[in-house]
Structures are given as structure tokens and as C-alpha cells.
Amino acid sequence: MRVTKHPILGNLDENPKIVNISVDDKIIPAIEGEPVASALMASGIRVMRTTPKYHHPRGIFCAIGRCTDCAMTIDGVPNVRTCVTKVRDGMKLETQEGLGKWGDKK
Ligand code: FES
Image 1 (tube, rainbow, N blue to C red):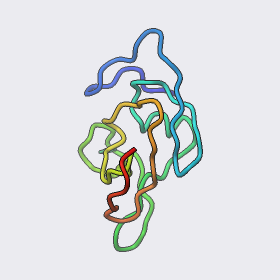
Image 2: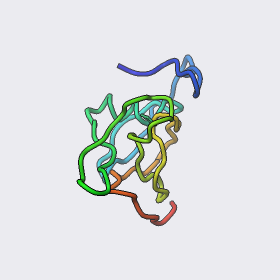
Image 3: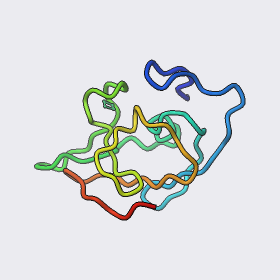
């Protein structure tokens, strides 16, 4: 299942482009412009971050950018909410541990 109509990001193009993104160094297909969280769910990826103190897994919850449970490190930037971030070709996603840390931008 894909999110084709999003209250914040809008609607997907009628002729969407399939691109590749990497998640913890694994390449998965995605639709350009869809929410990153949608691409992750479509590939069976449910855990996007772990909590700082107890390392409990967290994933998509509100899907509108309010709860931060879907935060990941994207292209070296921590705490990016994947539910309100559009897929771009070649994005590099990393499961965020705790508060995350800044990495190299690519
Ligand atoms: S799922 Fe709540 S901010 Fe993304």
C-alpha cells in the first residue's frame, strides 16, 4: 500500500518515477515524491528510530509530522520526520539511535 494523497505533502504525480533509496546500506525502491515513511512501510521496514534511554523501537504513528516517532537520519541530518519528507532519488537513510548524530552530507 502506498500513500498517494497526503494532507501535507499533497498528491503523487499521475506518472510517478521509481527511484532507489538506501536504508542502512540496503537499496529499496521508492516513488519519487511519496512520503519516505510510505516507501519504508512498502518495503516492510517498520522501525525508524530507537528511544534514547531504553532503546525501544519506534515507527510511524501520527503520519502528519507531530509525534517525531518516525525520525531518521537522512543524508547525514538527524531527526528528519520521514512521514512529512518526500522521497528523492539516492537518499541515504539510517535508523536513528537515540538522539542521533550528524554525519556527512552527500
Ligand atoms: S509519524 Fe509522527 S511525526 Fe512522523
